[in-house]
Length: 169
Image (cartoon, rainbow, N blue to C red; front, side, top):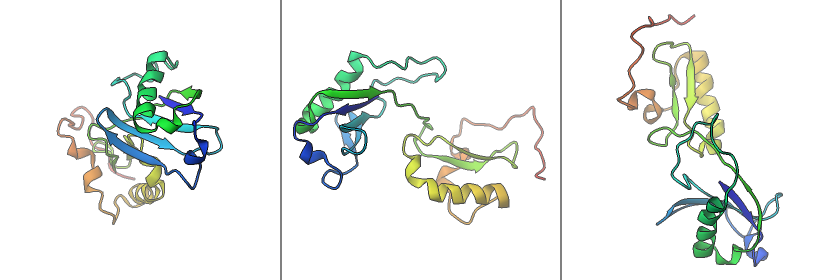
């Protein structure tokens, strides 16, 4: 869930004054953005209510309890931003079990390059991920070290025993 609040002291939350942030706190991880284009100070909280959802079945409405989770963060960490709510939206993203990307060739179909599980922070790496994925798709490998992003790091995954491997074209 994301909330845009009208700061009580907007001069403190302007672009160039207030940074984009990702903050680990006792209540979890908050992130936010200064006032930019969309009016208001933007605040979000990763896994704000601890829910895992099916995107096709989830409730996309904003509820008072969603707002209260974010308001508590505003009051505690950014009291000068704790003005009226200007808007709220649902935020949905995929997560891998360790919250790191998956960048690899599919183990059953090596002609398929996989990029997934960006866990809410993949956009920051789009240029290098594009390079890696182009290498994987065109060359079948990359000179960049992607060891920590390999699908095989999840020991519970086993390639399909029912499909034979497909030779690359």
